[in-house]
Image 1 (cartoon, rainbow, N blue to C red):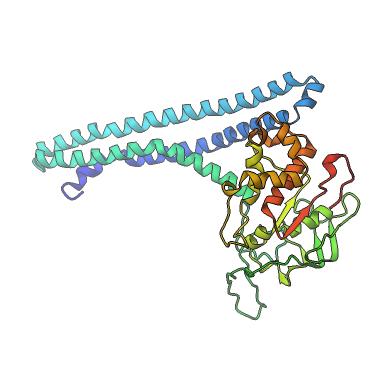
Image 2: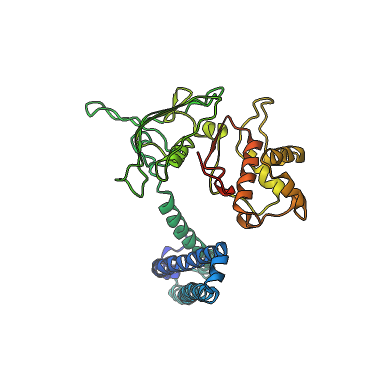
Length: 399
């Protein structure tokens, strides 16, 4: 541009065409990426659903229909991939064509101004090669646009799941995600000035809970209150049973105490500190749960039990943060004996090193719950919430 601006502009005259071409390409492929992602996501969900209920599938002799459904979904994803390949192949070939056109335009106009005596051959070659090198770097960038486009679409789908709006204060919005910064509101006469409040981390946890006039409705059913003006006191250091019929709100109370949801009305306090101002990490370090549906990993029995220490925070005795890798075999054995599953584990082919399979598929429902209890024993939390821990062992459930 300094030596010969007109020659540089003529040489790079195809660059705007390339930019327009890339905008059109990304606009067209966006819908194709979404169709591909949706098809493969449905195929993955179909496989997970069928394998987790493989006994039911076999009973109804539905192996063929499940396989055909999976093939249809995969074929739909492949069709979307082929369409993307055609679009990107066309775009890449046209981009290369326009980039290589700089040779033609550059040499044509360069020869013309040399003939007219407006520039020397050295100036023309300097400008031409500078432009050509710059265009080549743009050519290297084009393939990366495919990855960028996929990343943008993946992030868009992820944000639809998160739906995180940091401008909505947690205390006033019952369905805001846990961890949303608290933004105090002021009367209309006062000047509103959002403030981020640092959450409280007490020095110790006793485990006393107070629910005062708590009301709650799940986000999917905002007009159907599960809890209405519930007042409840849970003393520390004692075993408290919450009993009731199905749908009475027992599990909902457990999830509110675990801070998986935020109460829509009323107040919940732990050790006389409101949940709205308590640090979520502090609560999760001191509150653990054994739910009806236990999540186990495709790891050994030892590793699954030791996983209870994940996110447990500093050890109250030593002050050091222990991790699952720090758990000894003796601790795991002691926890399994307490959960009355040690003898069963010993009978497995590799004992505590036996792999449990995806979701603990090698165990029955009751055995999975016993392992979850052993995991909770390893964690040794201040508060342990049991969600019908005996329901998987053929007995009456309780919370």
